[in-house]
Length: 451
Image (cartoon, rainbow, N blue to C red; front, side, top):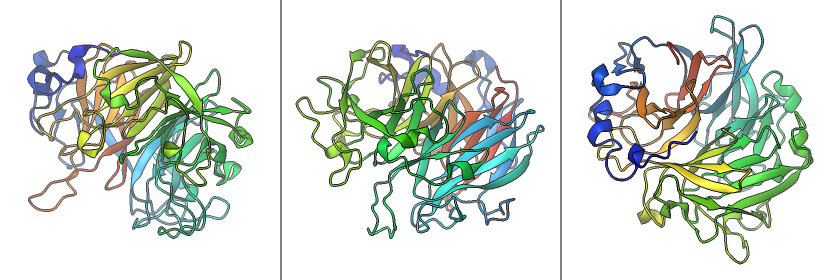
């Protein structure tokens, strides 16, 4: 998909001021259909105060942090983040869900024998089994003892790659007994087949998300670093591409993206701009002495970007997100979010979308995070900015529309606050959207007249 219209979300003001801003004119505001022309219509306030959706759409709460796990292994962990949906036969679905737990998490992923990497780490994954009617039939731990499991990505052989967004080492202030900052493979059908084995050759850094080329088996990885020096965009070339469960343990080579003459992607402001790219071998993927983004990549350096987050494969290439760039934090320029597309066949990188600036933090349109393909071939984007939190869509024609708003106020009196959305994904048949409210940790299933 290419949504490279300058008028879409470019930094000229139409994004969510002017015409498109009418879509989001205040929490719960209704917009006449004639003013829309696309999307599913205005959001309707949820009487239960959980999730606002367009008319005709309904939701079901599948799981909520603090409730008992159906497996009896403990309670549903907090901080629900990245997620993917897998077909399980007979209209059944399995959801694999990350839990981005740090050392202070009140609801950890319960440690389970054979599935725990480091008992002192509180993050990991859980799996929800959904029956033909969409109701939860089972819920269990799939990976434990990992740290800050943010996003990840699915593989062509139907496993989940869970990413640790941390670089903490064993014996450090976090109190871990093993090094962290790795990717772990999870088999949603039988987690004990995958165990809790770090894929060390894929690098040790603050991973966010991954996407796998289903034709060549190359794995693309984003690094979420918001403090300068910012993160890199990587590709991992497996020794056994497309080899199935466990094949990534065989190792491979890790490379980082270089755009010649562009040390910071934030300086690119015009959607449609393209560059040829180079891939540079990472000197030390283990980051034994020096974090990868600080290592010496030789003449020409390397290309950084602030807050590299969502990543997915589609349209013959890989899409990835920079959530924002702030010059006051060291970025070369400011933006409210970029969506990039890399075409491996041409070896080129293209800027597809620039977000903002939004003039009101209660309006959606800043800090895109998790992304996925929508049933209409466009995007669904989880927002992680200030004020109200939305899932919003971008059509193939480049039009933006609201899909969901988190109505669950977790703030204090006089200071409302809403948790970010994460893990947006669709059932294999495209009839159900699954999404997490990060806090309080809630997993929703949304059904309705999808295109």
